[in-house]
Length: 200
Ligand code: IMP
Image (tube, rainbow, N blue to C red):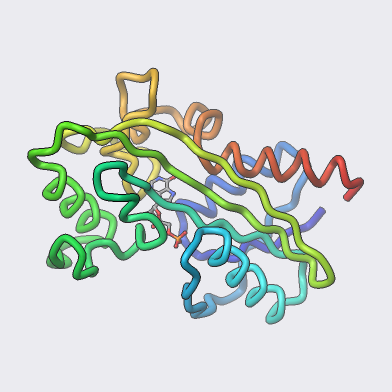
């Protein structure tokens, strides 16, 4: 099946293609970026909003991923605000020096400076929108936030997230290992299983 991916985030695109291609999906990048307002209060709502907007514009079966980091001691923040955490009033705005990913990570480490409970999880919701019907699946990866960034793989919060059972951060793992344990890998494989059981 050919699926349009409703994102222009290079990190997400790379991973979605890497995970779905071996499962027999042809992943198509959007010809242009749409400004979709992520007004939902949950990952699922936002994934649905993105999938629907790209489907309406381009008319192909459309896959959207909404994902983020949920930190226990921050009451679930940054959550749905993960991509723009640095700019939120919550916890104090962080100056944008370098990339948004770097500013997000700086703010997270600042907020957790004296915090002993560093438990966190990555969460992903994926939606496949076909117009007349849609499917969704979820994936999680539990771990904790380390004291300083390590590694150059992945994107976003990967350099400060150490998955449970590992002594390396997500950014220090080879790509295939990240895909095996990541929230996104799990969500996409769950979705593929669901579609198979529906004969799609
Ligand atoms: P979205 O585009 O609104 O779904 O925002 C996702 C944001 O969550 C990204 O910009 C990252 O900050 C964070 N995020 C999601 N998945 C990952 C991941 O696999 N590694 C690191 N950060 C992630």
